[in-house]
Length: 130
Image (cartoon, rainbow, N blue to C red; front, side, top):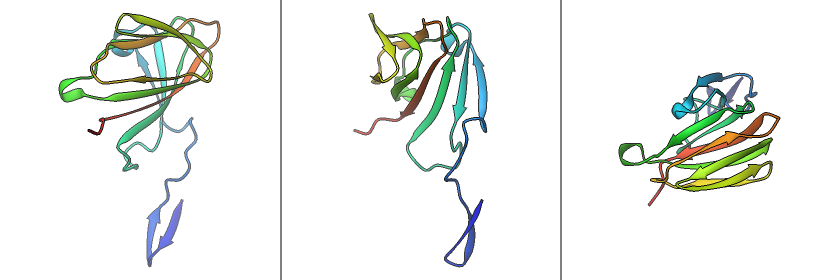
C-alpha cells in the first residue's frame, strides 16, 4: 500500500498478517524439533527491537543459549497459548498463556513446549540500553 506524503509517494508498512513472513527453524540453538517463526516488518522498522510470533509443537524447544559479548541481547517473551517450561541458569518455571518472561543479557536460557497443544508466544529482543 502506498501513501502520498509531502508531495511524494511512500510505502506504508502499517499492516502485516502473521502468514506473510514465516520461517521454520530446525533445532534452534540446538533445541529439539522445529520452531515456526513469524517475522514482522523485517527490514522496514527502525525500532531497536525485533518482534516475532513463535510456535512450538509438543516436545519442541529453543535450546539453551546466552547472549553476551558482541551478541548481547535482552529478550522479552509473552506466552499466548499452550504450556511450556522455561529455564534461566539453573532455575525452571512453568509458563502458560498470560505469562511474560524477561531474559537479561548473560543468562543461559531457553524453553520447551510441554503441553499437548502448540506453545505460541510473542518474542521481542534488542540490544539493551545503558
